[in-house]
Structure formats: structure tokens, C-alpha cells
Length: 371
Image 1 (cartoon, rainbow, N blue to C red):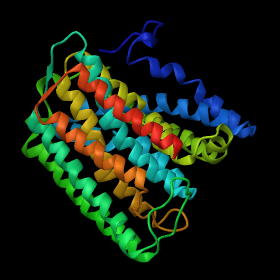
Image 2: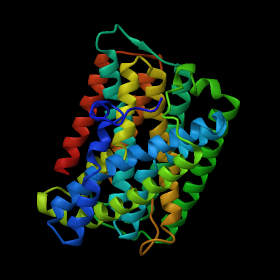
Image 3: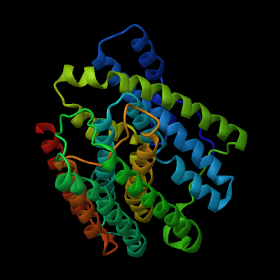
């Protein structure tokens, strides 16, 4: 059902991101006049939110007209597109540690912040909420595979190389051996991701697509949806370039490390619209969908976004991206995935579990801040 574009629309959960649309030209103008980096960074970070919302809306409209198979493929393909575009621009600027921090931040944000907020918001006023333990278990197992794959290059570097990077590092050339190991790991992850798509969209679709997942669309034609998707892609690219160009100077100006900016700020703004959707559907007691968004998006980042960035790094930047994470990132990834596996194994959630997940996220955030 197409909403009426009036003042009340912008007060709805679907409409509020578009209140930030004026920040898109403002961010570009600030960049052109060489304004203070902190202001440019803030404007571009907020400007990404409506572009990501538009991309998500266009994808949903296109998916609704493409059938369940193609629709599911479109959703998983474009679900993390804003984060991927931001990371590609950062990669081209040589900010490899920021790229890795944003990947880790996306995984942590989805598992802890989004799932925690969804469980808290959905659980208030309810004794408990239920979801498919089998579907969540499959997603969590994929995350465990990702954890093993993302840990091994770091362990190899610890044993055979120069050790783990420091949180304040910008980019480190680890040499061809670790770079080729990272590429091989990336190819394994992408192959597993492809098999996971076939599993979730074809052979076991019922596990991941409960009946209530069908949401009202806005009635866009295919041409309009494709056009909106193209416009959103261009705008995300423009905002990403402005954002990445101001990261180094802005982080220094406000006294935050590039590591913290990448793992917390960039990771949140890149997927803010999708994060809000997970909380919204949990409030409607659709926890299957909320868990699918949170855990599934984390698995997508680990199994698809990170490997694509490794492959792209052979063509962008000064040298390839090695999947060697610092100690804070490795510890946070492993703990978050273990926690996700634990809280989803029984197929039930309460508001207090949400509080606990949020508490873990804030503890990680404090550690990253002081790193």
C-alpha cells in the first residue's frame, strides 16, 4: 500500500529516514567548500541513512515483483550494499584497518546491538517471544564457520609473521603469503555463501521465510524500483566518498581513533535503516524475521562482504587486504558469535536477554574507545 507523502508519513518508522535527505546536498556542499572535517563527516554519515533506506525500499519493491526466489536473492545481495560501498571507497583510500574495523563492527552491531534492541523492544509487555530454533541454528553455524575462517590468517601471522596489528594502525603490508592465504579463505567463504543461498532460498526455504514475512509494498512498478535502486546506489557512492575522505581528519579532530570510528560509527550508519526494521518487526511479535535480519545480515557480512573486499583489494589500493584482525577484533568476533549461538539455540527470547546483549555491545564499545 503506497503511503501518503504528508507530514504524518515522516513520523512513521518507514518515513523518518527521509527527513535526513537534505543532508545529502549539504554534505556535498560542505565537501566542496572544504568545511571542517568533523562537520563534513557528521553530515555525510547521516546522509547515508536515507540513501540506504531508499535502497532497501527499492529492493523490497523489486523483490515483490520478482517472485520468492529472485526476490530473496535481491534482498540478500543488496542488504549490505551501503556497507560494501563505503568499504570499497575506504579500501581505495588505503584505509585497510578502517575497512576491517567496519566489517567487524557490522558483525557485532547485528548480533549484539540489533538483536539485543529487537529482543528488548519486542519482549516488553510479553512473557516471551518465539522463533525458529532450526533456522537460527543454521545461521549461527554459518557464523561459526566464518569465525574459524577469519581467525586462521591472524593465527598464521602470529606464528609465522610479524604479529597482529595495533588498533591505531591505518594499513599494513603483510606480504604475499598472508595475502594469498586471505584470498584462498575468501574464495572458500564465498563458495559456502553460495551454497547457503541455495539452501535458504531453494531446498529449505520454509525455514527462513515464515508466512508473516510478507510485508505491504508501496506498489512501485519494476521500472520505478530499478530507477530508485540506481539513484540510491549513486547517492550511497557519493556519500561514501565524502565520508571516507573525512574520516582521518575528523577522527583526529574529535579525539577518536580511526579504529573506533570504523568499528562503531561507520558500521552503524551503513545499515541504520535495516537495523530499525529488525526492531520494528520484533515489536510486532515477528521474531523469526527479526532474528533472520540480525543473524543473517552478520553471516552475509562475514561470508560475502569481507571476501568481496579481499578480492577487490587486488585491484584497489596499494596492496591486497589481508584478513589479519587485531586482538580486540578477534576477541569480539569470537565472543559475539558464541553468544549469538547460545541465545538463539532454544528458539525463545525475553526482554532481559536483549538487555544482556546490549550490555555486551556497550562493553565492547568501551574497550574499543580506550584502545
